[in-house]
Structure formats: structure tokens, C-alpha cells
Image 1 (cartoon, rainbow, N blue to C red):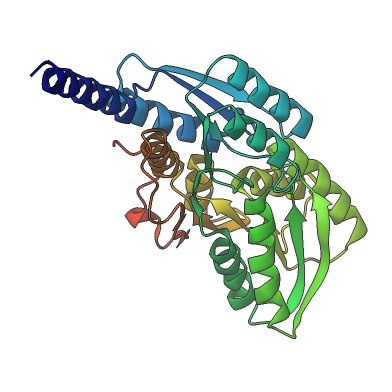
Image 2: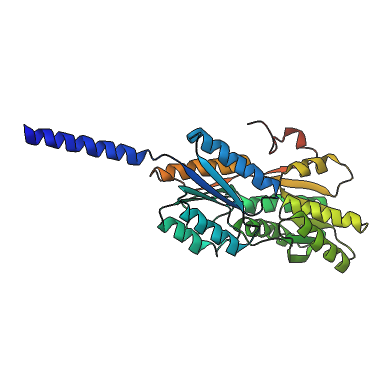
Amino acid sequence: MRTTSKLLCTAAAMLAMSGAASAQELQRIGISVGLLGNPFFVATIKGIEDRAKEINPNVEVTSVSADYDLNKQSSQIDSFIAAGMDIIMLNAVDAEAIAPAVARAKAAGVTVAAFDVSAPGADVTVMTDNVDAGRKACQYIVDALDGTGDVIIINGPQSSSIRDRVQGCQEVFSANEGINVLSDDQNGQGSRDGGLNVMQSLLTRFDKIDGVFAINDPTAIGAQLAARQLGRSEFIITGVDGAPDIEEALKDPNALIKASASQDPYVMAGQALQMGYEMFQGKTPENPTVLLEPQLITADTLGDYQGWTAVR
């Protein structure tokens, strides 16, 4: 009887320990994004925070800006590891070189959830189908130009999302013999100021431009500002994001910006956190990578667009 009792007690204890292990409390989350000054990343952080608070109202969330600096982001990941973060939410600034930092986090037992862009070795990833976003934004340019014209791609930091957008755009332009790409390698830094500076230089180099694809909306807004400063208005601009500033631009019939392939940063990042939490609980998702379909928004479709700031 004593032996049986001991066995029952041991079994009960093991079950209790197993239950505790399978229901770990989410206590700390670290978020590293490309640039906190970009409203897109503000929306992603809000999505993560809201979903995290649903899981544990007392969870601690720390958000930092990598400023598109690989070394800075690597150091941030190391700091998150040292701080004992349960989950690192990562918007990788480099599609490949961030791999060692991700590996260090995973070796330390930290779950890594990538959002908006992929990161080698991340446990889960949620992002827009960026190849499709590039295709849609650039197909709009091709259609508007009836398949003939001189175009520019304003590139950006070499994260996977930007590479994918440029790839999708190049596919569309290459499929149309009448489209001549004047430039596709200038880095606008994914920012308004970067887009302004690059576009000023390009406008000085080229007397005639028919279309411009900017890899995100801040870059597109900067490009439009450069055109207005230099008195140029012969071309159209498209971007990617569906940001609030782009909504305002699309309402202006005199704007050069005519379309943007939209993303939903709030939903994207919140879903990445939920999947990361499931991994943290030891539940491997059937599909660790999720691609969200972008929608092309224009002045004609703006009325049906929910937007980043919609009540959730």
C-alpha cells in the first residue's frame, strides 16, 4: 500500500509539473523594429501590446528602434537575452546578417517571432506577401502608362520585405518591353528624408520620368516632396503600406502619389505575437510562416479601406 501511495504521489507531482510547464506565464516581451519614427512600426507595436495584454495584463513590453542599423539591432537582441525576455518580436533590418543574433536568442531558450520581414532561424513569421505588393503597385504604373515609359524604383534597406517588393516590381516591369527602368539601386532608407534626398538626385539626373515605385509610403511621400520642390509633376508615384499619410495623399487630385499596396501592421504583428506565444507554450504551428495578402488602394477604392487607425 505504501509503495502504491508513493507511486500515486509521484505521478501526481509529475502531472502538476507537466501542467506548469505547458502553461508558462508570459512575463516579458522585447520588440526591435526598423525605425520607431515610422507610423507603420507604431501600429505593429500597438498590435503586439494589445494581444500581449489579452494573454497577461501584467506582461512587460519593451520596444526599441534599431534605426536600420544591424549592429544596433544585434546588440538589442543580446540585451533582450540578458534581460530574460520570454519572446523577442523581431523586425529584422537585414534579411541574412541577423541570423547569428537570432541563433543566440534561440540557444538561450528565447522564442523569436518575426513580423513584417523574415529572419533566418525565427520560430514563426507573419508578414505581407511583399512580392505581390510590389507586383500590384508596379502593375498600376504599367497600366497608367499603357505599357510604355521611363520608370524608377527607389530601393531601401535590404530587409526581406524590401527585397521582395523590388523583386515583384521588377517582374512586372520586365514583362513589359515598353518599360525602361532608369534606376533601381538607390537606397531611400525607407524614410521620408531618404526618399526626398534620393529623388532630388534622380530628378537632377533625369529630365523625363514617367513613373516611380517607392518601396514604402514614407519614401513615396519624400519623393513627392522632392518633385514639388523642383517643380516636376510629369510622373506618378506608387508605394507600399497604406499609411494614414497616403490616405490623405490619395484624397488630393493633384497629388503625384496614386496608389499604395496596403498592409495591416496591427493585425500582422498581433498574429505574430500569438503564434510566438503558442511556440513559447511548446505548441509548434502547422504553418510557421503566414503571408497576408496586400490590397491596392487608390482614390477610387479608398472608401472601402479600413486603414491602420481603424477601431479594433
